Length: 259
Ligand SMILES: [Zn+2]
Image (cartoon, rainbow, N blue to C red):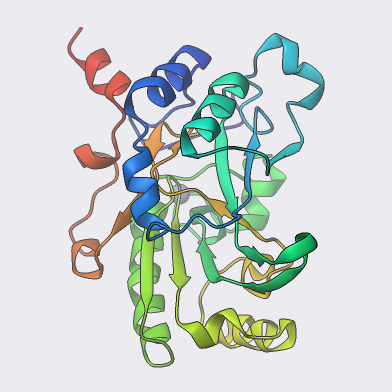
């Protein structure tokens, strides 16, 4: 019995697969590029097994919680900690911190998830929640959420100039890197979230308002669906297919397919 239904080929990664990915495939070089070489005092975070219920036995007690990683020497040190926890998800903190851990500002982001899309087959989020399938999604929802990501990009482009779009494994994230976006107040972020919702976008308000400050780390493994979190160019979105695109398929899946 599973509470999840997922598009074909998408499934939870095992601990062995998570280990293989983070030991051999996870590209620290690409993570550095994402941060444009300046990691500063960025905080990272992991969730070991909240949704998948897959966790190393020794972390049974902590499998549900968010573990913040803010003490590390370099990215290799972060990889080591990830390999210790073997988490289902890795995030970074969008807050920019100054001295004494004081929050200076925050990267603005928008989160589009497929479960929020009303599906002709599976119904609304409320319908899915009733069946305890709040994290499930299907091919149709995956395609519809991509359409929304393209539209949201267009919507944001009229206000900002430095946008990035990332396939998150389930849906899409839009990151706004304009300097003025970092400086927005909480109220301004909330207003923007409301405007986006009024325009019909199924965004997660907590992410945009900044209340929820973590966002999935690009190039990390989404252990719910066994896909690599992948930054994309806007003009790639139209034809992007996360079921088949090799750039987001971890090696353990392609190896499996050759059996
Ligand atoms: Zn559906």
